[in-house]
Amino acid sequence: MHSGMMIPLYKRIIIAAAIAIGYLGLSSVVVGFRPDEVFIAGLFFILYIASKKTRNFVLTLAPFLVFWVIFDYMKALPNYKFNTVHIGDLYEFDKKYFGIHVNGVLLSLNEYWELHRTVFLDVINGFFYLCWMPVPISFAAYLYTKNRRGALEFCLTFLLTNFVGFIGYYGFPAAPPWYVYYHGTAFNAATPGNVAGLAGFDNFLGVNIFHSLYAKSSNVFAAMPSLHSAYVVVSVFYAFKKNVSTGWKIFLTTVMVGTWFAAIYTHHHYISDVLIGILCALIGIAIFQRILLRNKGFNKFMNAYYGQVI
Image (cartoon, rainbow, N blue to C red):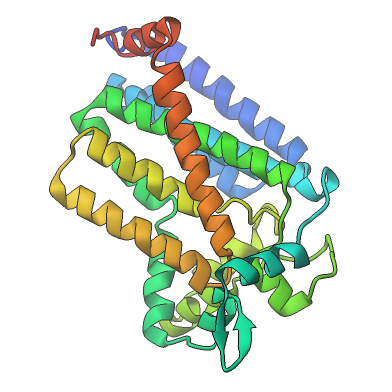
């Protein structure tokens, strides 16, 4: 859509209403009607019809909405119905190649940190884990103000990285470390989400943030890859590629390293999950940069979208 094109208000209302109502109707069938779906639909509707600036903004960040809808709909097609869930084998692999010996006993790093928990680490790692979506979205919004084409590239790469990760979810269903810690290696499809090491954050601050989030978990058996670990890689890549402020580069790099550690410390991912998550980000970046951006048709679409020629 050409950014200079002024769409009449009544047409904007019709388009936005059709998308919002269609989304709510489909959601009610696929995963059941929920208040957060109304919020998403309402936010899109308001931003789309309010003005040309807000419309371009929401269309640029639309890949985040697409990601959330697909991630939410995964509840209807749990990955454990498609492939065998890896539980004990993944635990043993991680312990064998990344574990450490403590008093003659081989422990996974998750088990090691479970024995060395502190309130400080609980809180700081909780904050890092909360960054998984707010930070990429905030960075996309910032980038939008400086480089709209760059913002769109970032958002589309973020979405593409998720697609790569979703292939991993369905191709290699995997239980998180806390599953083995609390339930052993027997598969139980009815196992609910668990805050695991993130409980310390909620308990210390007297909040219910992570308990609420993991009660809505789309799939317990989607630990491989760690997309928390992937998102920050994509953010850091674009921070340096688009040469944003030094403050953003330092902040995003700190969040990246902190998120990797938090994934392990909180018992939500093995090191192998984190490494494969990083690989997913690199694959997503490579596909976008080396294939899509070298495609004339795709570049024509990107340029036409904003009515600019690079």
